[in-house]
Image: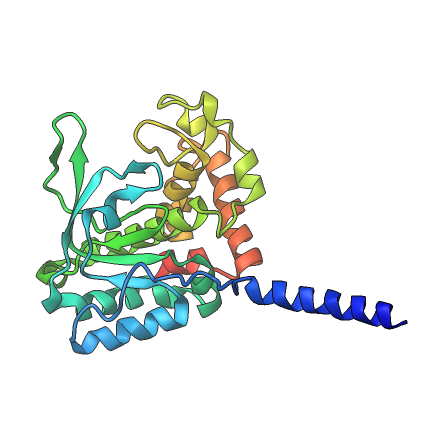
Length: 277
């Protein structure tokens, strides 16, 4: 009996000693990639609050890598740093022309990791590796979309230019949201076209709008439709794109309705209302 008790005590002591020798495993501490605030302006508190609410960084100071890197390649654009004197008007423009059309829940779902505020975005000409002078309102990658009017130029835009800017912002916002899988694609829209047979001569037959670098895909096509829907009213389309001479196969109308109905039903987003304002 005493021998059993002694053996039991030795076993317990061994277990205790071995446990003491094992180092306590601590989880790695994840260091945020960006630090906010980036400055000490009044608008910095607004940016910090936005990040706390939506988990999305707004950057007006950024590197070329922040803007151009796209998982496995570089996007064909360059961007200038945001003008710190015009960040407040840029934030107001994002609220007016983009954010207020979506619910908080949808924004938390669809916003990218970061939003870049640039004073000027230009496309790179692949033939000369130079930049085209016409500035763009927006561009996007898998991790961001960028606003290209964080400068004095924003106040000079005409009504037509502001309308185009709004459509560009929504297009790039949706391009990254759908491209990363955070937001789905209408099954009807996705199945309606075999993009492997689409070319510039048969786009009407297949109802294709979007083309990216000569490559027709469901993603570039969807971006083309988002651009169209957020810049044009349904009545205008009835008098133009949906006319039989422009839509001989009825595909433009079918795909338009598939997108509008899907996002309204699944996500509660009324894309037609954006184009009507």
